[in-house]
Image 1 (cartoon, rainbow, N blue to C red):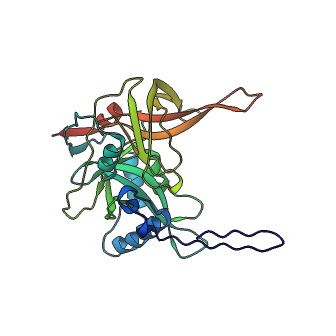
Image 2 (image 1 turned 60 degrees about the vertical axis):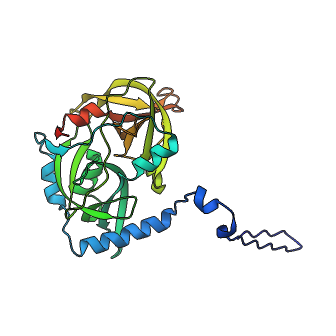
Image 3 (image 1 turned 90 degrees about the vertical axis):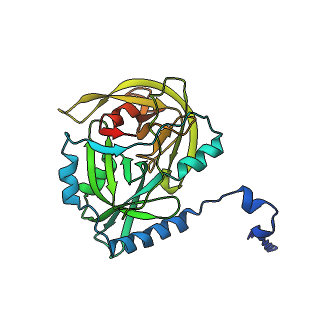
Length: 300
């Protein structure tokens, strides 16, 4: 419906179009209704909470501080055939999840959901996301009360996270186990390390725009100066040109075959100088796949 009005002589034009009558539109376009999806996710979380217990924040704190654990996983074999952009999207979307940190705030009785991204690597329900995504849940602040941590698949299935199998704060990675009740889930393969200049894709949920696909190249592999005051360290990062934003954290970085070559982590602004704070560049920092493989005890 479109309405237009002019000053003086009021003119109202109402135009109604039934999209179902536009030939081929429903078949060629898949429009994401983000508000509807979020509402459905919240209802699913309530349903899961009623019958399944999620990992508690207290247990998550302990698991995140264990830097020695390795996750036992059964990986799928990497694909070798390059895909078109749309074919890659349709394939990878199935195993890319919306992570959900459910909590209650001190101002109302409603359950709120903070969304980020993640992806499945084992059909038995093993999911990868960022350490900082799980830390938001485990170390919740500002009087908010954690209710549980969940993931939603593209087909609407929603599962509680029951355990953190491995985690690395330096490499900003967490390996999660879902309570799948025996269900077999779609999974992504881990690929070979990407080289500078290689084409890559990112799939995630920036600012609540669910399943947003972007494309770019690997710009650089470099050592990032990370950590706070007195705890500085260096870690390998893979900088890419594919776009993403808040909400994409934990999402997969993919090669042209749909194999995972990295995990979205953070962005870093490069300013002109201390005197001139204008933004010159924004680095898109991702965790290379070899850092993830170091957390896994894997088999095929």
